Image 1: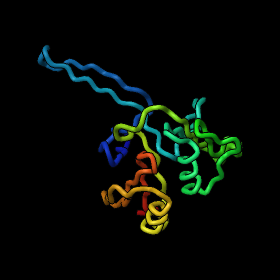
Image 2: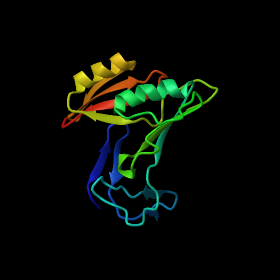
Image 3: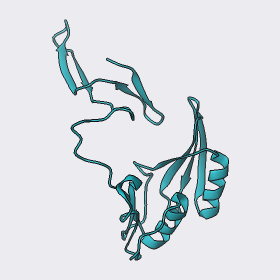
Image 4: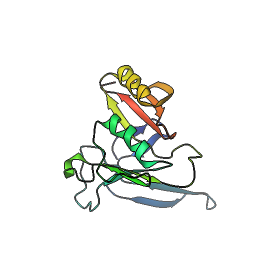
Length: 170
């Protein structure tokens, strides 16, 4: 057993273990069982030698791919790929592999309806300055947080997709 990995939105993830562990132990009382399910947790400095997949792209559903890609292009300081249309636009598909992930924007007929279950986290040396620039580009500031020594701001892009900007070194 190792240390715990904390995640700010869901609390403690669990003890670090090298393998999947599933046990179903019976207690003295035959009617009660304790089931423990753990999963492997890899820290950024750890590598899976058996990994055959890598993150290729972050894809956003949107109502206008070129408009949303233009916003993220300015945020990331990366060029929108040639051939952009309102239906599909990308950033970085032609970039070298070390510039991944790629960012893709795909038009869908329905509008965003609920909070994102996954969102990008960006990091900035000057949190307030960067948030100000993002708002000037069209982001909407939702909330500011400070927890466990970390500081971050949650924003929404022009189509309402949440993302965070985290203070570097906080």
